Image (cartoon, rainbow, N blue to C red; front, side, top):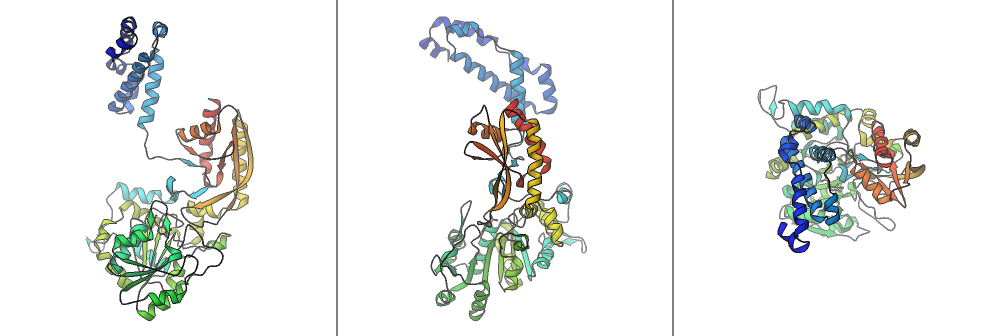
Amino acid sequence: MVIVEILQIGVIIVANKKNIFALIPKVDDLLKEEKIENLLEKVPRITVVESIRENIEHIRSQIIKLNEQETENFKIDEEELIEHIIQNVELKNRMNLRKVINATGVVLHTNLGRALLSESIKEDIWNVASSYSTLEFDINSGTRGSRYAHVEEIITKLTGAESAMVVNNNAAAVLLVLDTLAKNKEVIVSRGQLVEIGGAFRVPDVMQQSGAKLVEVGTTNKTHLSDYKSAISEETAVLLKVHTSNYRILGFTEEVSLKNLVDLGKEYDVPVIEDIGSGTFIDFSKYGLYKEPTVQESVLAGADIVTFSGDKLLGGPQAGIIVGKEKYIKEMKKNPYTRAFRVDKLTLAALEATLRLYLNEKDAINEIPTLRMLTMSFDEIKEKADTLYEMLKNNIKNCTIEKINGVSQVGGGSMPLEEMETVLISIKPEFLSINKFEEMLRGYKTPIITRISEDKVLIDVRTIKSNEFDIIVEGLRHILMG
Ligand SMILES: *Cc1c(COP(=O)(O)O)cnc(C)c1O
């Protein structure tokens, strides 16, 4: 570094610079400063030392860039340096995976963690997490038990299915089902249902992975029962129906009902499998939303196997739930993939506790955040928006705050056509560009995730918990008035 300086700027500056480099405090001395010593009581030493080194390195790189004049005037403010070190330590010391505020209004936001778990079940999860548990232990016999037994009964009770099992996610569930029932054989599926789900889950790819051969029938917009029928052969292992959860084909369309597919399957002795994607036990049309197929309806229609996600409309933890005929599920449990896709105890605790809420639909709607957010009345939304609006009006300056009507989305590849009426709070900063403002909200210590429309940031209260309003006010005060 010094040699480069000599070549570029000259010997005198280097000599001066050498002097200022010597002004930079030593790591060991900084570690003895009172404020830093206090920090060391709460934060690992390695983090503090790393922060000090980074700050010192930053000062060095600044010094290198100085011209002669600046070099002469250069001073190091040690108080400021220590403040920077403390701030840097705070940044390093927080979790990478941490809470954010979802102000986007997208209820099942896959990038922000999909479904939120109910407050009411946190003790159930923590008890299993922090103590030994009945995970694979049968209390009655004192011998080894099955980790799946804890949720099987309640899932069968809620869905009416003969049997149930749970794996890591729905993609794994579909793979396990096809690998078990259709390896090296043919699976018949409608061209209109060859879906891609966010995060590169494509039905044809899963099919290939399982070693099943895809037989596409029908056209994108229309598939008839006769299309399935004429494709059935000796090689047919499964008739597959996939719910087009994240898109709709509208207009001149036709798909075969599950009931008709089941009848066809019976005629040829071929099992019928349905991947309904976002599994729900609740008929959302009762709450003024689009109708999504319920798991019970698919079981009732006679599907041999139904698979769905735990963390979409169900509002539980990430999981793939498989329900259906016992003889098939028994085979799946023996498949080595079951071991590879197995769910951990935290998931099982969260799932069992969430499912128990479904024993009373009213409890489910009130306690499960996903269901609350989706079924919230417009009056309730308005009231929530009014509260936040008043809080912001009374506390925040340097911006224009307005309330406007808008729509929230379900997200998570569910109910793609649904547009839920909502009230948005729009904020237009006076002294910041809109992109900078959005970035600062995102960079706040509790990140606030918003969307931009024209020159405003929009906040949708549907996906914000009331106890998060204070954080938003504090964040805006910090960004716009700090
Ligand atoms: C979401 C979805 C999947 C994937 O489920 P994950 O739980 O995210 O693995 C599979 N099929 C359909 C139809 C879906 O909607």
